Length: 306
Ligand code: C5P
Image (cartoon, rainbow, N blue to C red; front, top):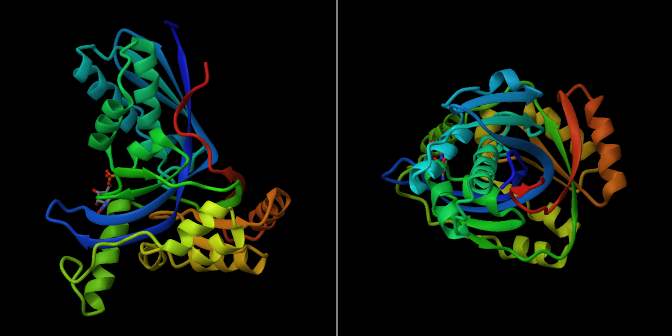
């Protein structure tokens, strides 16, 4: 058993996010095709006399450095399950945009589960970790799993999706985040305005066969054409400036554009790694985002580095 464990964990983009009706528990039924990309947080777990958290990296000040952090709640929940007092220091090094629609907080929780499990030698079965992950949040099970997976239910019921190659993305980071509950609420409001009801009138969403086929064959052009996000109108309604970001990426040659999850990060698919590097440079100087990062995927979920 090592005295310090460092876990690397990726961001996600939803290549399809089909949002169904609001359920009795307040969550929405989803068909969410999660795709893990090579933008990472690292969480280092060290024994301590009590549970503490520190955060470094871009926007670290916007992340709670106390027991309210989802990573700290992950350590508490895992410890409670195995009868261990969670006396650890969690250091979170952020590379994933904060409140950006890329599951950064969920990633840190998944990394804390994996890191504490390794440090404490709990040897939790993957299914047990996945169950604890689902208690922490809808996206946490996928942050453990990585790759590409269809998430049903509220996003926590995962089925791996086969993929036929590497896809090359660019992520344009906005100034400031968006609240996920606020974006779902705006989605409901827009649907009610349209004369429907966000509770009842919506069929259970399903994965798009054309999207699954594009993933299976590694066809970036087909994937670009099939990208979809039902939360995008709500994110654009709350942050109208994102329309200019999406347009700038499309004008610069992206083969697919969408808001990542609940936003405000915008995702652009390109045909290869050089195109992604060039598009990231163009977007960074476009004045429509704070910065833009190339990232390839799919990549594995939360992984112990050392
Ligand atoms: O599960 P998680 O804590 O990440 O969800 C954050 C919020 O996002 C929920 O409180 C809810 O408002 C919204 N949400 C939803 N339907 C989902 C997932 C999340 O309405 N399937």
